[in-house]
Image (cartoon, rainbow, N blue to C red; front, side, top):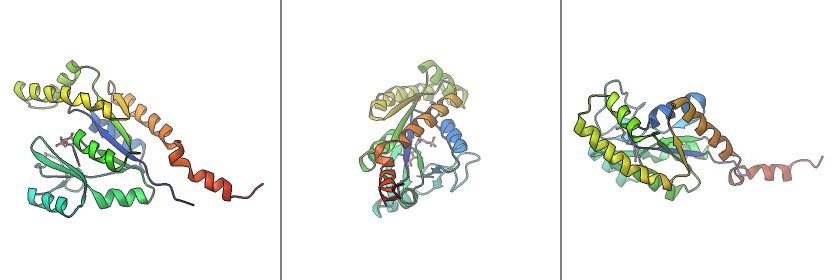
Length: 206
Ligand code: 5GP
C-alpha cells in the first residue's frame, strides 16, 4: 500500500495583506504542520532569529545553493534573494508530513510547476484603503514607500487568478478559519485518499 504523501500548502499575498499573521494562526491550530524556513539574503530585522524566521545567507551562499540545486524555488523580492530549501521540504512530504510555504508569487508559480497538486492560497485585504492603513500602521514607511508598496500590491493582486483559493483577510482569526476549512476539504480529494481504497481491498471481507 502506498503511503500518502504530505500536503503542500502555499500561502502568498501582497505585503500588508496579513499572510504572516494567518500563517502564525494556522501553525498554532495545526501543530503537525511543518513550516519551511526560507533562506534569504536580506538583513535580519530586530528580533528575528537565524534558523527560525529565516536562514540568513550571503548572496554567494545563496548562489551556491542555487547552483547545487538545493532550492526548490527562489526569487528576488525587493532586491533580495529568497528561496525554499529543497531537502527539508521533500523529506517531510515523503514522510507524509504537511508543509507550509509562505512565499511570494514568483516562487509560488515555480512551485506550482513541480507540485501541481499543492494547495495554493492567496490572501488579500478587504479593500485597498484597509491595505494602506495596515502598511501605514505597521511601521516607519514614508508616504513614498507606502505608495510604492500599494502600487506593487495592486499589481500582485492580479496573480490571484493563478491560485486555488482567495482568502479575504478581514479578521485574521476568521481568515485562518477559512483556510482550515478548505484544508479539511482538500484532505478528502480522491487523489489524496486513494490509499484508503487499497486498504479496503486488502482488508478482511467481513
Ligand atoms: P519579508 O522580507 O518581509 O520577510 O518577505 C518579503 C517577501 O518574500 C514576502 O512576500 C515573503 O512571502 C517572501 N518570501 C519569504 N520566503 C520566501 C521564499 O523562500 N521564496 C520566495 N519566493 N519568497 C519568499
